[in-house]
Length: 388
Image (cartoon, rainbow, N blue to C red; front, side, top):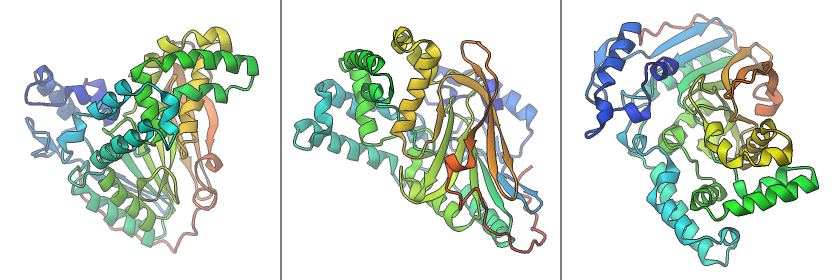
């Protein structure tokens, strides 16, 4: 569904607002969408056009239970949806423009550190606003279906969550040199990134990274109170939970922790497919970091370094790829989980599929993935006619 919406031109900038020129083409996009997936009509929280309910469950024997429902327009709160980038918030922008001594951001005795704590607390209060919802009453479907699936001993509970659950934090661009093994190359990378400290744009991203504040509040991290409730469901009412997402345009894999925090007790995994044609962070950052190609050897090496930077900034993210586009295939059996990523360069230089990058050990402890919990005797699951 998410891919079709994107293919038909439906994305956040095109969602309805009271004073947006994007409103004009929206009916045509929905017409194409509704013709492709005829749905029952009902009012949506984003207004303007009635939308349908296509929540559905699929029972795959005693191996897996699937749940899916849209997260875009039925219940979703307008804010933070229409203010989706945390780093475009005036509070972090003002901080980065006022304070240019980056080293002081981590000095507990500095004015910069004290001010950053205030800004971070305010941003987190926005992210954790209990009034925000993405899935609304659909949380009851998730809880009911997964509870029954667990009780009947189904091995995997899989939620096609559409938008990402992992708390995406950008790389600390100023410490990328620490990830370079060759000392001479590391010194040159450090000289280059020191120049970026003069940019308030990069300062605000690094300031947020140091506080583990996610850059994207259009996904579930922007609805953190509700996300904590979802994580409780995945923790208490599943045997082995897997969530599948898109939307962020790049490939990600996360361990999701208790209450949705950046660290803690592993609760589930979130696998995020990159866009097929949608640009992600790669094209956005490639111009700035292109000079490092001569230092590291190639643009592929530059992208690999940027990938490592994001992985280092996110304690629960063992895999990230901002360069290659494509899709992934997830294989689930009674005894293991494995993912294969099929990818193509955004610059159209072909590369073989990358298989085995997301083996079970690199995503979750073996207790949750390598050896799924022993299934109970299987009984026939009730049918849930909740969608079309």
